[in-house]
Length: 278
Image 1 (cartoon, rainbow, N blue to C red):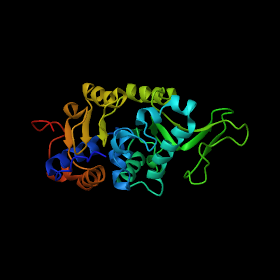
Image 2 (cartoon, one colour):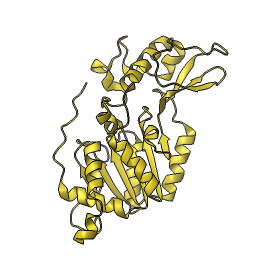
Image 3 (cartoon, rainbow, N blue to C red):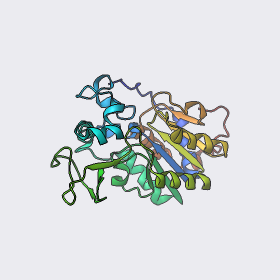
Image 4 (spheres, one colour):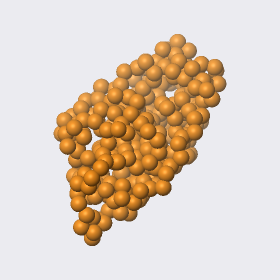
């Protein structure tokens, strides 16, 4: 698995600027990827690839093949073994302080939304309600035959591939596999919220390789919103943000939370007023 770039010591000025932006914002969008769950013990990876050596499953298939809609339809046992490996990586893990701080902000601010690529369900477990799970949640299952739905805490008791007790149809997780379309309701909700606009957009722990993950950052900045990236390395939006904190999600959000209100005591200018951009 590729080793992620090491975090750098947090820049105090960047933290203060982020805290001022957070204090002043009424509407906030958090865009999250695997990096936000790293402090919960989950691996960071491109898509789901990092769970496998050299981007291949134990069956020897490339990840994009094993975890595809076509494989689920033709060889469900192969696809389900790969899905189960993802679920095992999530099993027993819990949301961390980064997830909790975002949930607390939803209760504090006028309007807060989360757009996440993660399928671990941690944002909802931490208390966030306005969550767009663009790739689904590995714990939600549905029968491909009769449409029966259920939620499971873990896959330990499942026979793989699982079959429906009602109709014997194949059960699948409600996640987006390679080659499948994104869920229309999630895309419509994202479009609606982006049309309303956001004062502040965070991109946290994601490489932003997908257009629907990068575009909200670019669009927000074009419309005058303040944009912040939290990521130890470079991403597809690093050159489009106002501020880049090159550290982990929990460390950064805890530091920003701790610095909130400093602008009032120090009389510092509003975010973006100081020269230069992160």
